[in-house]
Amino acid sequence: MALVLWDAFLELGDKGLFYEAFASLNDANKEAFKDMLLASFAEMPLSTLRGACCALKRWRAWSLQAEASWSEPSTVLVALWLRSLRPRGPTAAHGALANLHWLRTHIGLETHSAHALVKQQGSIAGGHVPVQAVLLRARVWAHFEGLLTSGSPYVRAVALAWLLCTAG
Image 1 (spheres, one colour):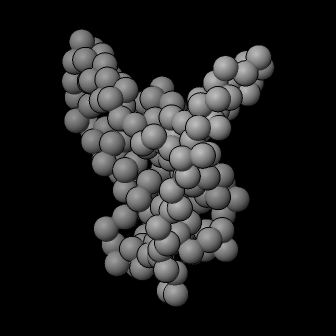
Image 2 (cartoon, rainbow, N blue to C red; image 1 turned 120 degrees about the vertical axis):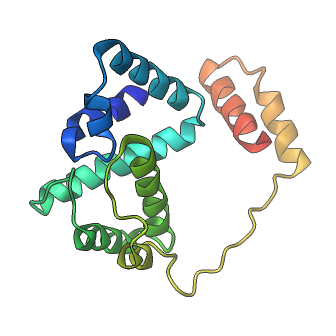
């Protein structure tokens, strides 16, 4: 995923917010910058990188469909995309906005994420009430632990994934 983001940074070229500074570096410093960026991505949670890559992929696809440039969008275009995500759920646009802001910060994609119009369309839809997740009961936890000794590697892998995800 880190390489997908690096490729997007390069593809942005001079449309990226900090590409000009990168382009002025000598080859050794360009390579050092690449290593630094990839190392910083490696230190981030996988869910953060996955969310950023997913948002980038969706943004690019929507931009293509809208016959617009993904790499230098207008404020209105970004707001329209966020608005188009609302049917996916009350927090879909908000999550996409957070990922757009991340992309702006880390690879220099100008997403206008601080603009009022964009923030408005990326807000959580009115009437949405966050609900605390229900904790797993000890009985369910013990069942998953028991599945770790299953003869099926698939069942063991799923049980381990559930335990790791719920352990936090």
